[in-house]
Amino acid sequence: INAQTRRIGQFKNGSFPVKEPFPFTGQDMMNAYPGQIKLLPGTFETLQDDPNLRRGLFDAVTLFSVSEHLSDPRLVLKGIFSILSPKQLFRFSHHNYYGYSGHHEHPKVPDQFDRNNSRHWLVASWAHLDPESPPYKYPNLNRVRLGDLLAVVGTYFKCAWRVRVVGRKQLNKVCKLLQDRGFSKEELLIDRLHGACERRTEAL
Image 1: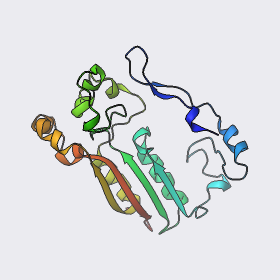
Image 2 (image 1 turned 60 degrees about the vertical axis):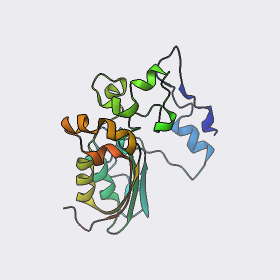
Image 3 (image 1 turned 120 degrees about the vertical axis):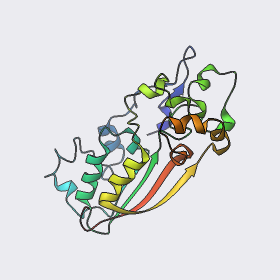
Image 4 (image 1 turned 120 degrees about the horizontal axis):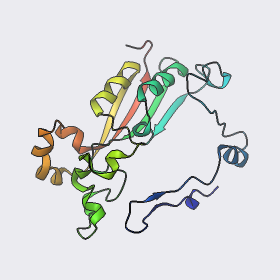
């Protein structure tokens, strides 16, 4: 399966990138990698009696660039807790909506900003935090605040954290305005949050 055939990020008529459907079904991927991939349609609640999700079956669970798209991160984290045994591992990377590239469009970093690109002006330098910015209305971005996410993760896991900071120089120009709206400097600087976590014996 060649994931490059999925065309993402193409601009049409000056609009934001068109997100085209992934061209393969779950069944296609399972057929391509027999015995290596198993698709379980449903949620942790609907699959709670599925033997493929029994506690301790997995050594680790990973979520990379997933948590920012979940409609209810708490339920997913609780589900991950339910299938891991104490001290088993959970690794995740969270693309923070309130960071420089949280809009999931271009530019991803300040050096990519094109002053002649009108679309860049709608999202660059935290413009995507304006409720009128197109990404603010994207239904697949949950806009969870970092403090809330950390609190929920901490309920189920003990974690070591690493962050990717983007836009420190650019933030100095708009920081006061954004802080006046209730955003902290830390959550604006953190573009990505990486967690290396261990399941607690009991949820807090």
